[in-house]
Image (cartoon, rainbow, N blue to C red; front, side):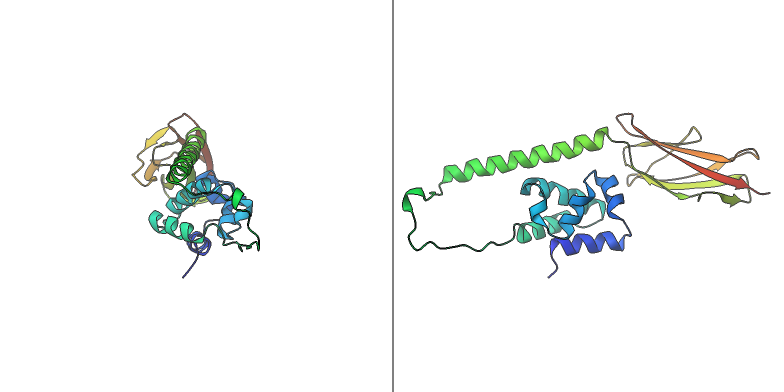
Length: 208
């Protein structure tokens, strides 16, 4: 059965998403993304934070979240060899109790919540994602109508040359823009709820 690292890397590769692009989408450093794919746990934060990372990555590359988290729980942390002392010191032995279980459970839960809130806050204050599929840079057009297609964050607002464009529930948008013979540039702008903007400029050539 495939490991969590193999599943995430395969899904990302199949979608032709580079680690740098996934970093932009999730706000998770590409070094952490690569470490998760390589299952290099030593170079990753604590487990609750990694749990939040895997959840965010899985959502972006269309891997079922519950399945990804189940694989993570199975594969993390790596098994370590337990050394048995011939003369164990019973005085220093830690006695596992319901209270200790409760304290550790609450601590892990709080760390997980704080990690999740931190990721959401970074997303909120960061400029939105903006990918443009059409038109291509310096695309030659044969009519005064140009189709603009792309993808952004689901809660972002999109404008093309100051004309508002409808964004669907998946963040996709598509519109036809009327241009004049003097138009040589399309300005596509995505604005997040916090007012942060991502702007892409596409040059076009009108050949009638």
